[in-house]
Length: 320
Picture 1 (cartoon, helix red, strand yellow):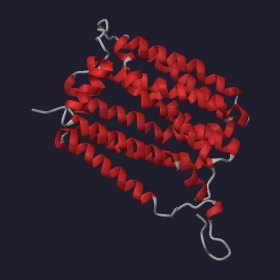
Picture 2: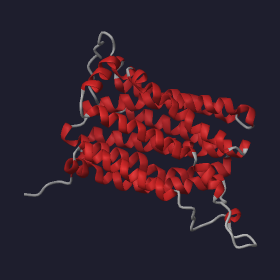
Picture 3: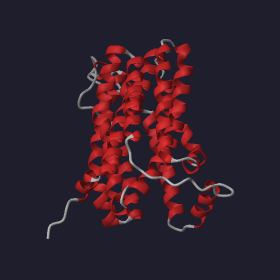
Picture 4: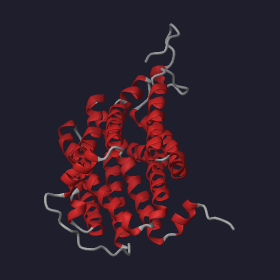
């Protein structure tokens, strides 16, 4: 008797395949804009701190994740995904007016809305997937979703950097707007029957918080994940300072994002089998340890491809 490789079963599932298509499309645009926004600000101002604020603007809404996530409980998920995608498709073209430091407020505002919409989008998508994809496939589906989403970092940052170099930040914003429109078409094609959401007195946020506090396994897992994401955000905010110290132009960050994407693809493919073998808590612990090791290695001041500003000076020393 032969068994089918589980990811292949996921890809043969019609709804799962369409979900993954939407993830690939929207992930490409998001990864491209994520890189380009920081490079955009860096070019306009020369400030690493202001460039890092782009990441802060996109991630800050996650602090209100439990509150924003309740929208996925109050409305049907497929229409909510469509509405969120259309909102961003309409909002991103406004960035074409940003051409000086005085217009950065608009860029930060759009990125903040982008982050808030992303929180709602992720909550609605996760809830819809749980009802549309067979439970036995969820672990591998989530692994493939991570692979597809993070795998876009192999292509999107390099494509975004090239598009930015040719047409500026406005070109990348328009590209992302188009990807949201395409994702809307994918979500509209899904054939999912959804029941009318049931309103819970007091809200599901309070109910979920009480459940987390009372659950001996979930409480430390969520706490560890939150601290890890905080540290990862701080680490990511320093990327433009690291690139500058190595003597490269800001667009070199696209190379680093591409390498990160390669690692994400590998882990995403292995996450399903590893999750079944290790269990949730050990799998999460190994992931946090791997991140810590990677950050530690990044502290080593070496670059195999130094930029012009980092090449040896007359004294034979490299500047960092």
